[in-house]
Image (cartoon, rainbow, N blue to C red):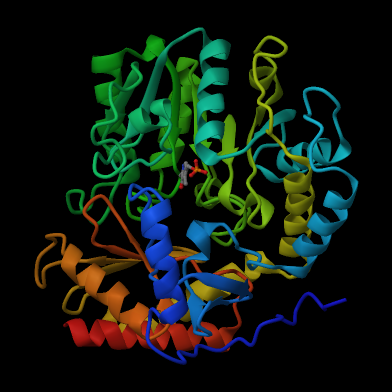
Length: 446
Ligand SMILES: *Cc1c(COP(=O)(O)O)cnc(C)c1O
């Protein structure tokens, strides 16, 4: 058996030929005939293997992975604990449907979620497949519990691509364009975005700005839930000013609304804590989890106060595949990996290394800000000397990194953010090598 700390693939960036190489080019030609052009990919290369901090393509090129398939493979893309747990689970059964013949793995994942999310009150959970599905179910629960309809969301929010979560998502292109009509009773208010808010605006002031609109345009007594990402993900890794989230949570408490933290991207050890809400000392009523939850297997969950989660009538929630047994086994192994491999501390260490390597670039030329927490960090690009978004610079930097063998993603309402989401298991040598490439691309841009 492989030791959990020794990756199977050699942890080194290495381009052995052109990118994309001949086999990727061949696959791209087949893809263009078989796969809808509505599905796009960041990388022009096809994966053959992935492990630790690297991805190997079908032509033998090895890329440093700063994307983790969008914050999913935090424990590595083939963590030995996860692989072993999946292999063991599929030997027994791939599916029974928890709504027909339940199994222990589902119960254990719910126990783990209750134990690890903030708040020492009684909690219960339900499992689903995707982040969007979990967000939808959190909204369903909040509406039944409060007997109210209105859902409050924020500028720059991303909650998914289903009909309800499209309505909750802020950015029209590419997520919503042409896909309406959208679900009703979703209201959007400004978030706290320190880099773009008026100079010196506090979290409490930003919260008052949002809540005043909720009071006047929605009515406090109509709000079923406020749903917010404690760190905005797709919207640009926006860390709200201190006190913003706490004010929203307090308003919910005072007005009988449910405070829902969408921790799909920020949760599960990514930010150097089990959940990003912890950094702000906020205890959500309901937490939505997915992405990093199951080491790459599709699994999501809604966990919250027992009286809220139990307010729905029996059989009111569910789904054929929700809480698949193999995904649950993977999740339990991923939780064990976070503990045994010290990955929360490693996320904090990643932040320290990134800040150290890029320190002298921040505020210089096109790099307006470096922000984020743990291994969820972002670079915001601006036209030099202004705060005007500069998406071309973000794109150019990401492209330059890719050409050198470093996989980097962009994001942001304005498309001007480069985000770093390395696996928490990444070795420091590989991390520093990838950051060196990024640093070189930054210098070339200014
Ligand atoms: C990715 C994401 C979702 C949607 O998750 P899917 O699994 O893609 O449906 C929802 N909320 C946040 C914050 C996300 O980052």
